[in-house]
Every structure is written in C-alpha cells, then in structure tokens.
Length: 175
Length: 175
DNA sequence: TTAATATTTCAGAAATTTCAGAAATAACTG
DNA sequence: CAGTTATTTCTGAAATTTCTGAAATATTAA
Figure 1 (tube, protein in one colour):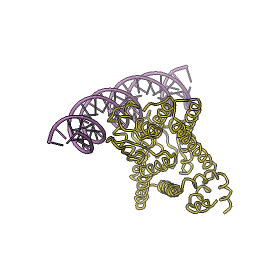
Figure 2: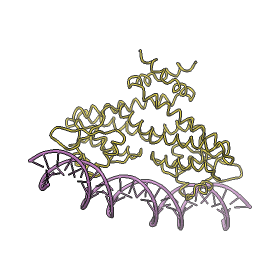
Figure 3: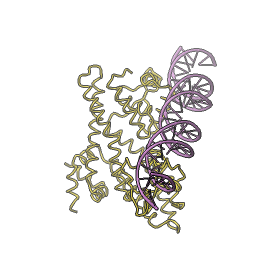
Figure 4: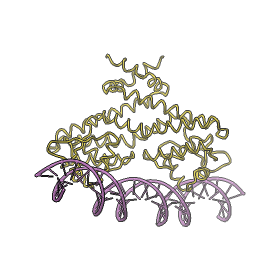
C-alpha cells in the first residue's frame, strides 16, 4: 500500500506512542496501518509498506491477535491471510481496556488478595502496612467494578454520560 | 528498612507491573516501597532495602518527582533528603492520570489536529482515511473532556458515580 | 575554609528487547 | 504426489534500556 505523507505521519506517531505504553513500535505501526487501510492487507503488503522483515510482521500480527485487535479475513481466489482491525475508535478502546484489565488489573488483584490473606496471621508486618495494602486492594476492586460498568454501557450512553459532565456533580452532590 | 515477606512480595509485583506499563522496574519498586513505608525514607535506606545502586535510586527518584508522585521531606538534625509519596490510592490515580494525559494524550491530540489540517488541501490522501483520522481525533477529544470531568470531581462523588453503576444507564436511557 | 557528608552526573557494562534472515513447517495447486 | 506459495519458528545480531561504579559537584558543619 502506498502511504501519503499524512498517513506516514500518523503511522509513525502511532509507533512512537506504542513504545510509550509497552507495545513495540512495529506492532503499533501495523495496527495504525490496518486502521487507516480501507481494505484488509496481507502480510507481504504490510512488509513492503512499513519496510520491516516479513517475520517481524508475522510475530507482530500474532501479538495484535492476542489482544483481539486484529482478525484474519480471506478473499476469494487468494489464499493468503489478510488482516483487518475495527474502525470504530470506541470499539478499539473497549477492546484495549479489556486486554489491559486482563493483563494488569486481574493479576494485581490476585496478588493483593494473597497479600491480605498472608497478612492475617502475620505478626511481623506492621499494621499500617497491611492497612495500606488493603486500601490499594479496595481501590483496585473499585476500578474493576468501574470497568465492568463501562464495558456494559452502549457507546451512546457513555457519550451522554461524558457530555453530561459537571451536571453529574451537582446531581450527586446532595444525596 | 526491613521488608517482611508480604512487603517483599508487594514490592516485587509492583516492579513487574511497572515494566508492563512503561515505567522501569526500579522506579516502580521505589514507589511501592515508599508507599508501604510509614515514614519518609532517605536514598541510602532505599538503596539497601532494594539492593540497587545508589545512583540508580537518584535517577529513579528524579523520574518519580517528574511525575509528581514523590516529594522531598526534611527531618530535623538530618541533612539528607527523605522521600515520601501519597498514601491515598485515589490521589495516586489522579496524579498518574494527569501525567499520562500530558505525556500521551496531549501530543497525540496535537498530531491528529495537524493531520486533519494537512488533509484539507491534500488530494492524494483518500477521503476514507481522512475520515478515520477525524474520528480518532474526536474520540481523543472526548477522552480529554472525560479526563477533565473526572479530575474535577471530589473522590466521594466519583465513588458514588461508580457505585451507582447500572442505574445510570436507565437514568440516561430515556432522554 | 576545610573536612565530612550527601547528591548528581556520566561512561561504559549488563540485561533486555527488537528485529532480520534462514530454516522449518504448513497449505494449497495442478 | 511434486512443486509452489504462504506462514511460522528460531537463532543470533543490532539497538535500546537499565543499571553500576567512579568521579564530579554540591551542601553542611565545624
């Protein structure tokens, strides 16, 4: 696929941002490319457009698939795999949230619960420390609930909620 | 500072999670340590407890300070710098949100605006591509608004909002 | 001011991550 | 089935990041 200057700018920036949050550059670039593309792309096209090794594309696509961000599509009379991603930013956001929850929040919740349990029959750990660990656990459980709520909302409701903005505050202010 | 097994577990996990989100292990471990500690710690104590180089502690503290997550405290009759962090997970969350907004969201908003501007007098970039870039921009602007809203809310209001949960949906459902 | 203590900077070592190229495997075609 | 094409896996090279130890700088106390 031929990239115009604007598209190139977009793809490169996405690559940089990817590295800021723990995804590697190529993975993020491929995702950006698929997002911009109006048609599914095969691995060869991605390789040529981004100028990276074919093998690198293969690995990166696997990574994107593990996040459920990219899926395979087949075209008639073409036995190569083609790849595409969602075009709706909101859907992308939801999917990434879900991935992060699984990779970051869930393991942390487990660990914190373990720590709290360990702490119960533990004489040496100061009470204050146990208390603080408990508070982090409670906070993370709240985040988890929050995530559950947001996940359940249709995009339109969420939008209204955000647009509603400050009004919510006064609404909730006097209970 | 002497770490009990529970504390060690917590600190090590935090270090691992840090790497998942773009903060390096030592930085995250130091933050965890300061969070657990009931008193401010000096660099030497951190060095000994975590078993890393003194210089590494210095650099990492700088990083934490740039996030506004750690501040210096001075004790009487002790000229060494001592460090502490907020103990309220909510406050931590807010501070981290703000940092991420500045480092991730703001530059992306700028870039997207540039792309949209560039696109206006651009014949070669397909209309569909321009459209998708616009949609990402709108999405990110919404996120920005959202962040602004949340930042303004007192913790208690936010908590209510989350706890309210599914009810919000029906409340907003019929406008 | 000098000596003692505390902190930062910096160059390179060590560890980790990313990536290309080759080789292996799989899938399809005729 | 043999040949062709597509895909994945693997190994080591290259790049990047993290970290240490030493040296330089700054701060305080006497």
